[in-house]
Length: 173
Image 1 (tube, rainbow, N blue to C red):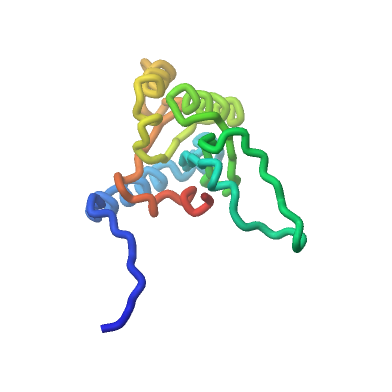
Image 2: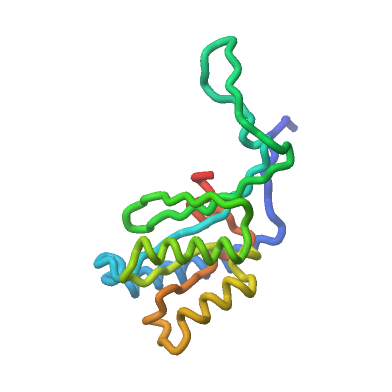
C-alpha cells in the first residue's frame, strides 16, 4: 500500500451518453461542414462561469512587498461570465453579467446574432437552468417559429449531462 492522490469521479456520469453525444455532435459538424466553412453556420461553444469575490482574490505576480488591491464592494458579491468559443476561428468571446438567468442568456444570444448577422448560429452548451428556462425556450421558439430546422437562425445542442470535460470552455475557466 502507498499514499495516492484521489480523483474526483461523478457517479451520475453516463459514459455511454457521453460517447453518443460526442458522436451526435461530430455527425452534426460533418453534415454541416460546408455551411460552417462558408460562414453560413457559426458554431459557438458556450459555458457560464460564476465567481464569488474570493475567487478573484488569489495569488498574482507583482512587486515584492507591495499589495495588489482588488476592489470588492460586497464579500458575497457574485460575478457571472458567459464564455463562447467560435468553433472555426477559436476566438473567445466573453460577456459579463450580474447573474446567469434566462434574461441574460437571451441577451447573449441576441448579441451574438447581431455580431454574426446573416449567419445561422449553432450553440453547443450544457443543460444549465438558464439554458432550459422558459424565457430562453420562449425566445428560441419565437425566432425559429414556422421554419424547418435547417433554416433556424439559432439551434442548440446539449453536451451530455455530468460531463464538463466535453466542453472546451471549461478549460478556459
